[in-house]
Image (cartoon, rainbow, N blue to C red):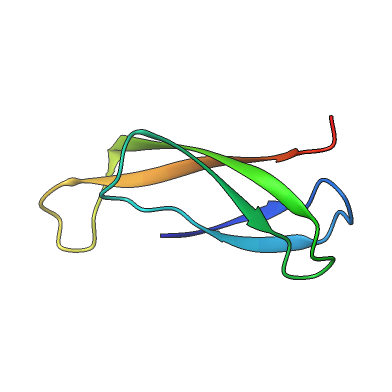
Length: 72
């Protein structure tokens, strides 16, 4: 699933890919598509019981995404 977040270096809004079939918490390093600086993606995938998926069968999954600077 695609999520939007802000680069912690250039503050531009970027798209980040989160694997909805992966672990509940996902961490990986990716370069900003605008300024090319690396950040760590920390994503938490949760089911939203108050909303259903498009087919109406299962709760929709949502992701919270944080982008962390790698230079400390």
